[in-house]
Image (tube, rainbow over all chains, first blue to last red; front, side):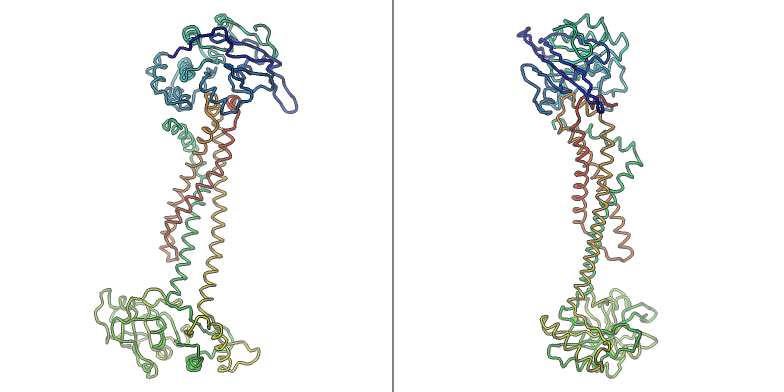
Length: 232
Length: 401
């Protein structure tokens, strides 16, 4: 696995300022994020916490370039991403960002190996060898050709983690990655994610409900009613 | 498209869902099958009709004028061979041949076949440019003397005497219980003279055919050859004038003859064939468009079913065009299936129609036209749903259940 060197540990990889996001629901406008500013440093492990409906997933989607804020500025790795085209955003998601979802979001009817290879075919080349390496490292070397529905929850999430790593991203976004898992495989997955941060220096932004998980983070950011409660 | 293999797997998923839908997707694709087949058949029928017109008049010069009696229930037409000497006096008329035709059983020994009886004078030989394989064409004296002689067309001879017939001149055949002596056999000609095929005809002196064979049951007309194409309308006027005079028609009394020139006969036949083919083309096009809407319908269902997958692909960094390609190739594959099934369908129908003897011509280019139009329609109608899939917001697509 390629190491992301921590040349300047204090530089911000994510810098948002006064991010607002509102949704239209019929004639009503619902403000989900009401002005959030946040700095995340390279190699940092940040946990986003808050009651459901507080806007933490919306914030994670905006940080992960899956959603566009209504207003506010966003510097990602010293690049202003506000005005980028959807193709440019797709390229950044592909090369710099990795996603781990609560519901795994694997492509059904495509093997574990192909699921991991998938993001690499949008990038430079098909990284089949690297995909095998990643899956082997996560203990899935005998599950390469299995379809997602033939895998357990924990195995699915490991495949998803391998997929998020295939293009060596700098930042991993995880939305309650253990939410659908039993405690044993949840712990395993958490261990893997923690190692990605501590050993490989990946920046990690994770939404979680679990205080014991957030205790492992470098920093916990609490969101309530669309505002940050603490954190910087 | 870096990885064709994985790309293929993603595309194949849509085909699998098609298979799962089974009858439903078959019904939805029915429009494109039928549309594709219609385009092929329209073209083949159109060409067939055109070929049949060309074939029917292939032995008639454009300088030909045809005079026949209109089918009226009034008085019997006075049109007949007695008019010929007078018509020959018109300076632009080069040649005239009467024609009395009908289909009758003809017997040689124990072999009886149904053939065209073609009662005419020797001048037909020059008009149609007939060549003899055996013997000679009868002369006009044979008619005057009511000699029971015949000249056989090539296929008539084959039917009566077998495919590898020897010299048959001097043999006798029986028509209407009377013996006729064969005086000549024609070389193979191909095509027909008006509605009559030369090769399966039996040529009989006009007077003989009228008195002993066909009488008033035959179809009668005069074929006139004008010296120059430019003189056709001039000739028509002179002929009308002369015939009115000969038949004693004055003032507003309806004429007992009808004059048509070959050019306008062929033209009107071609025009009606063209009208028919425009009609069929528009039917084909409408069916194809309906088929296109079917494809659009399938594609929308597919986009809806795979919305979450689109969201995943986008989250992983697939550009809009990648999604577009996946769905557009689905539309292309569907259209191609439509074309293949449509082609099989039209081949079957082609053979069916050809069996009935209806004029249809096998045209490979029709399949090309059908291919291009089916693929175009499928792609155009598939584009909109594909574009819609490509333009989905990643987070909305991901959230879709």
